Length: 101
Image 1 (cartoon, rainbow, N blue to C red):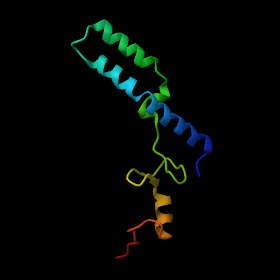
Image 2: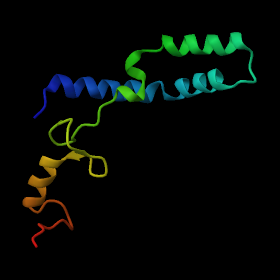
Image 3: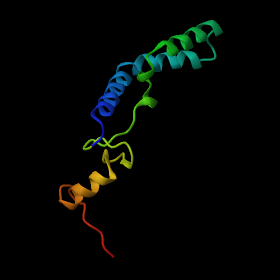
Image 4: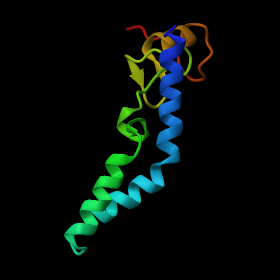
């Protein structure tokens, strides 16, 4: 199990990213629009920089839903390789069978 503080910090980042997603997308669109005046684009860039750091989606770390492990993460299953193997061994993942050749 991962540290509870690390998992909670990541959940906080996910909530902030979801909260500021629309505002961040709007400001990015203004900052990238070359038809707008330079002053307006610069002010949009400053407002974007003024948003909380943890509201950026790149700060969110993919973590296992079962254990909170940050490494060896399968996006499709939202879990780590170790949790996947344990659950598959117990027969808790439908359609997954142990391979042997």
